[in-house]
Image (cartoon, rainbow, N blue to C red; front, side):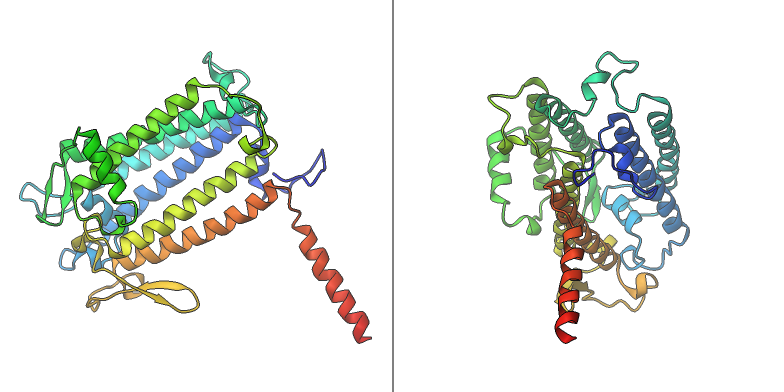
Length: 358
């Protein structure tokens, strides 16, 4: 948190970030608590959508975002290959149970465990203590984050390979093989650098995630195993790394992912099948960008009468947009910009204007 040179700043109770500024244990508690909230919202929203599901209306016209994502993952189909919502209740309740586990872990890290991670039950606990001016500490923690992301990508790849996901080209769930031809996969990934919105092959999607998993895990291992080389300069982060800087980068990542995903979901019908998300959307410009439905939406009863795709894309785009604004705010604060100068400048300008008029 920016203290504007005050060595002993005080913050109001509403400034929740202030209690995790340099305290790794509290930082972990906050992360785990957020994960629990996400799990709870996912499980509860899935149950709510399942409770109002109408089999006589296309899933893509019910603004059922969670059910649509589960269906695209191949969950909810009966033995005949028809989507009926089977096992969806289990998935929802499982998320609710996980949310309570995460909540308990968040409370332990916030109230019972060492708030600084200087000590703990495991011998390596102290290695995760936040030291903003220690590049070896920062790269060690970054490495573990990358490995977790890589493992998550592997889970998705293995799910598609073993269980299968929905292929709109076939209108059925099928297993998607993983290619071990690294050269061919590398060329495929590179060829989609500028046209990934139009990807129409599940093989490309899954092998792209496999490549991403490999890069993330390899990068994570590199960051864990290596130390700072040469002098720790400002170019490498000296004097710039802080809780506020990390928050700004996190918001930037969320923002750009939200905006890119919105553009992708608006038009791509391979990852976002028409059956579950509704017809592709049209991009419009008014006061700000927005997407509108292109098909018959007379049977859409929810989200102001729009399709699941319209609900997903528009909401996600604006979430991403505001995350980018949060990134700019916290990035400037991390760089030392004092936003109070703006109010002072406006006040000075107003005073000068009043004086001249008088």
